[in-house]
Image (cartoon, rainbow, N blue to C red; front, side, top):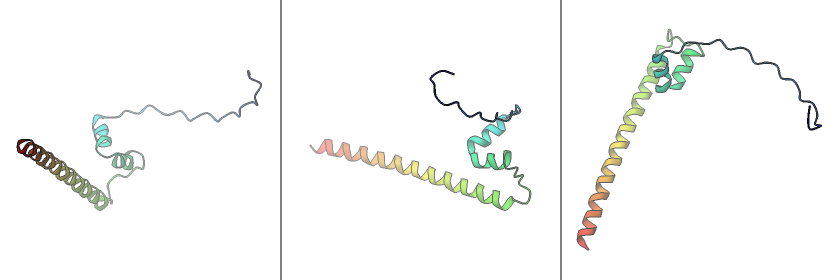
Length: 93
């Protein structure tokens, strides 16, 4: 040991993780909703008997997606209005 400091406490070794195959559909599920992936892959939720909860989650994702679509459309309209206002201001000078 160098440096003359107190000896470090030994940590217990981490458990060895088995290599696990990850499919493309599993990656897509993770990209779409990490929580849904975790519920299925880690927590073991199978969907059996939990269809109402999963249906509510799907509906929430649909509502969120619609909200994003509306926000993007409103942003485009705002940019268009700004461009028109700038053009009118420049021509009025």
